[in-house]
Image 1 (spheres, rainbow, N blue to C red):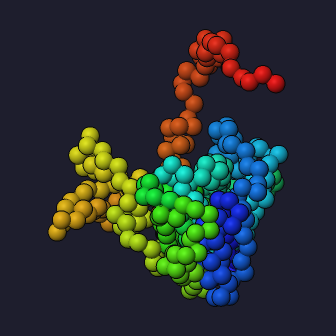
Image 2: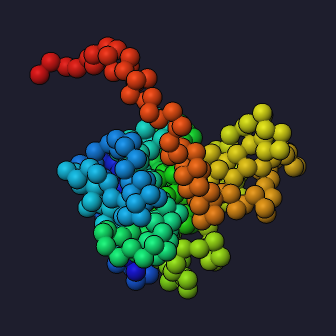
Image 3: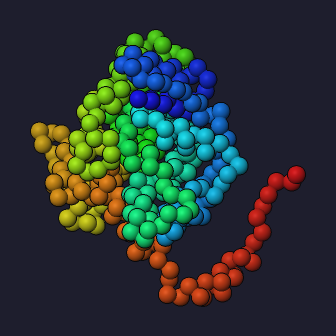
Length: 328
């Protein structure tokens, strides 16, 4: 079993120290470990061209990104090859580093498990044997641990955004660790509780991998044990909930996994309640991901009946203003 560590901070910073400690824990359980520092890589922004989605859903192809002149292929291969992931980031402005968001954007639609299942199914049904097919490693189960480190309690979006970065690849998040009041480089080594949590987290990732019997993604597989702090959402353990008062049936929705439900106060504690029927719509369920694929096919990617008018309607915007750029 291979456990990959990705650190999004500075060399020998607090996030790197914790991910190394976690990898030590995984290695003790027999895992083969590897470490990548995201800041060492050149990863370009997603351009939003939708070529990867069209490749998967319409052309039954591999969904490869059209951007080739950066290091994305390198880290993509490492993620596809790993069985477990330890992801660690410092907290900047209540969230993880911007480079992680760039990676998440590039890993998003192109690696959405449902989209890749659809592409594989369409190839099989049409008997397509030529051309690039979907990487079969996309369909193996993986587990992940998330570690966020910040200098204060300005941390609201850190773990939710880190969770979103592994959502498309359908990793089971088995631990979430949030460490506050650790702003100075390397100072986390004095936090013995944080060091112990990281070591335990890495060991737990390896333990979950050893216990897996079904290594193929499905909604029927056994969910690995979650050992992190229990969140408000009973499915993904996020504490981030969006209130939608215009929906009488589902006034709240989990900001991470998208499951809808209601909020109630029980014994002076807020409780997010969802029905068994609504769990299938969660974005951490394969069924919920397939629903998203159908939404794109039937709505977002469906050509407008007036598509022939598009060049004419865009004309006034093409001629409006000239981009301001620095002098070279």
